[in-house]
Length: 96
Picture (tube, rainbow, N blue to C red):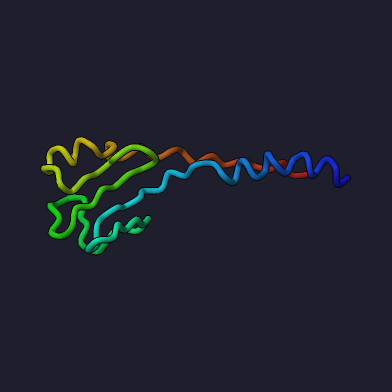
């Protein structure tokens, strides 16, 4: 019983190590580089930022850079179009 479970262990660990799609925020504070998955308090998506330059990445893709003009910043972001809601599927269980 233990041998088949040990064979599945590498596959289980592989699924845990898959890359995530979290947004990462990078900025300089003094001489140090800060990297966080939480935005700094001065960062704003919809208006110019007053503070250090913030670069936002998702995976390997840059989705925001506060050193760019607002038009270019908007073009980097994925479209924020509202998606139509998916219909709710209701499954009825048979009465036995």
